[in-house]
Length: 243
Figure 1 (cartoon, rainbow, N blue to C red):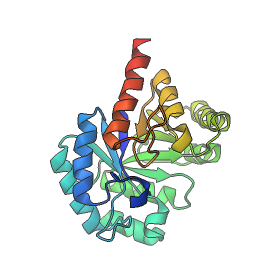
Figure 2 (figure 1 turned 120 degrees about the vertical axis):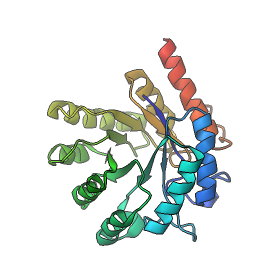
Figure 3 (figure 1 turned 180 degrees about the vertical axis):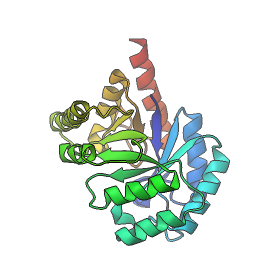
Figure 4 (figure 1 turned 60 degrees about the horizontal axis):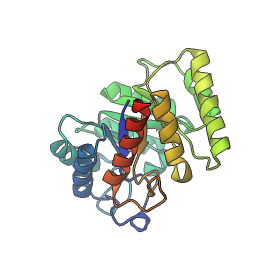
C-alpha cells in the first residue's frame, strides 16, 4: 500500500497558489511530498507555456529534474488524449522519450488506449490502467496485453458518495470475476477524495492525493500544499492500521 502524490493534473494556476506547473517547481514539490510520506509521484508534464505536453523535450527535462530531486522514487505521468489532442502525436511522443518515466496512466475510456499501452510496454514503461467506469473495466479484461498492468487505477469522478461507491464496487467486481488481480489504487475527486482514501486504507489498497484531485483537507480547510494533503492521507492509513 502506498500514498501516491498527484501533484498537478489538469488544474491551472488559479486553482491553488502552490500548484507546481514548471519542471523546477514539480521537482521541489515532489521532494516535499516524499518527505511528507508519499511513496510515489504522479504528475502531468508541462511545457514552457504552462500547457500539458508529452513532447520529448518536456518529458526529458521534467524527468531529469524530478529524478535528481527524489532519486529512487517511482515517477509516473499521464497520457490523457486531451494533452496532445492527436493519437498519432501521443504515440510519436512516447517513442521519442529519452528520460523515461517509471509508469504512465492510460485511460481505458479513450479509443487509443490499447495502442498507447502497447507503445509504453515497448519502451519498458509500466502501465497504470485507469478505470472510471464498469465499461472501462470490461474493456480492460477483454484486451490481450504482453504484460499485465503495473496496477489498476480505479478513479471515480462521481461526486455523490453512494453513486461513486457503487461505481468503484462495480469496477472491482468485474476485475475479480475475470481473475485480474493486480495492485489496486483507489481515488476520488474533489468531494470524494477523503471518502475513497479511507475506503482504500481499510481495504489495504493504495490511494493518491494531491492538487490534481482536490485542495481541501479532511476537515474542509484549504491545504497549504501537496505535502499537507499527503500527510493527511498518511495519517488515515496509520489510523486504519492501528484498528
